[in-house]
Length: 153
Image: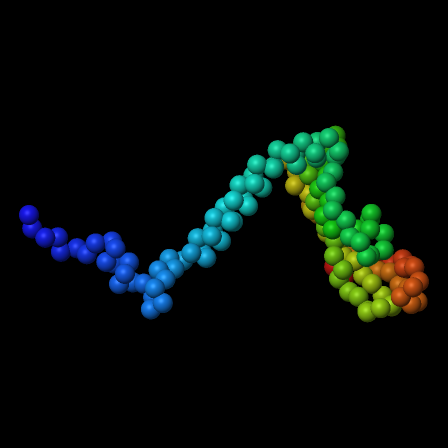
């Protein structure tokens, strides 16, 4: 029986092992783990989509709010709500962020963007952005509404 010229698996492992005797780490192990984690995260998001749609249908909106801004109910971090008008049907997606702040007092401007994802609409561009500015005398005072600007801050 002729001898095989290919080395055995044990001989290859011994030849590739490090000087301290530990086997070498597989290449791209971190990339594989990261890829599997991202696929798993995407899969869970896909599985939770029907739950979020049922919640949206039952409550009419999904809202994530800010904490430390004036009138947080008027400036949601993220708001997804149903649009069910006679001529328009779809989703309204609203988000806001602090556009301009002057430290521990002074002025604060919050920019809000409202976008529509409509599958039935009466026409025209309905997306809008606006900027609400507030002022306070010191860090302990309440915010006072100053003005609203159309468009970006």
